[in-house]
Length: 250
Ligand code: NAP
Image 1 (cartoon, rainbow, N blue to C red):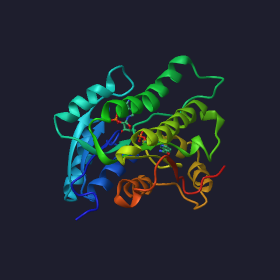
Image 2: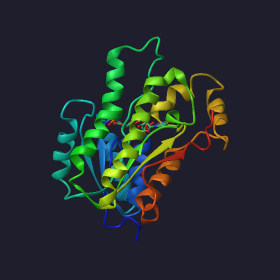
Image 3: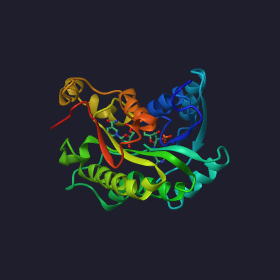
Image 4: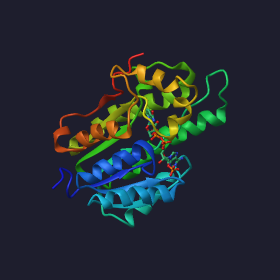
């Protein structure tokens, strides 16, 4: 039996990329997983199928984030499938953003709406559903601390805000024995980084060289860290920024 047997998890943005890796990993540990998607219902169903094929249990849950009322809509949909929650993974996010010289207000507002406002209100409206002893795990980025890429500043700023949410929320939910942490990936091969990793012949090798371990990360590298924090073994880690960059110290 997996270490998360009997628990219910919700991973946002689990139709693709890192979120899919997290959903599959938590499912493999026995959690029943709510696989959230924005626009790609078919891809979310593939995540559900993969979890079920591995002997787990999951269901898909659609909600566009970054719009007024998005969090309440998501929880209303969630309530139709499940009665309470143990693990909330705020993973859905967008980036990259243009440099400060080029970014407009609309693009700035959009990245903050999806990457900051949505997780904030998902937590606000989800706290009553989250059971005591639960977990909140926010997927941040190495760009909020160890890696400095000013060309992507607005995106990095959203992850800095998410880190404050992790830190301060840990005090709010601590009395209920709920831990809250940020997990910060480095460069992970997903749709989000496809352009970057294929922008030139050397792009992949250059990205790999940023990590002390000399390779580009995979979704499962992040999912393992999330699975640890979600497990009983992670019970004494809260309010933290957990480095999952493979040593990307630029
Ligand atoms: P990805 O491959 O682009 O996937 C993004 C996921 O988020 C998809 O499941 C997408 O759902 C969902 N999503 C995006 N915008 C949404 C919206 N407005 N409403 C609802 N769902 C939305 O991204 P990723 O690379 O896996 O990144 C996942 C997280 O890790 C993000 O928070 C990102 O900032 C962070 N991160 C990534 C890297 C990296 O190198 N990849 C590094 C550091 C941090 P649909 O496709 O169904 O619309």
